[in-house]
Length: 93
Image (cartoon, rainbow, N blue to C red):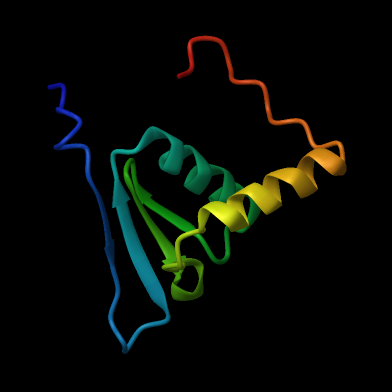
């Protein structure tokens, strides 16, 4: 069954008593990142099932949005340092 984009949600659950959070997602990019991290840090990030991972709570964050000025300054610093953005894989968006 194919889910609509609206139905392809990500849910992050945690409480104050535990040091870990549970991440359930249908986002393919997030799932791939979590899979890579689980391979690299198997003692900290655990794959529970196909779409659910347990991660340390410190890995979950909410950040202040970048202002247009901050984004432009970061872009200019990256260009000055010779940073080249990654080339998207074939068939990617």
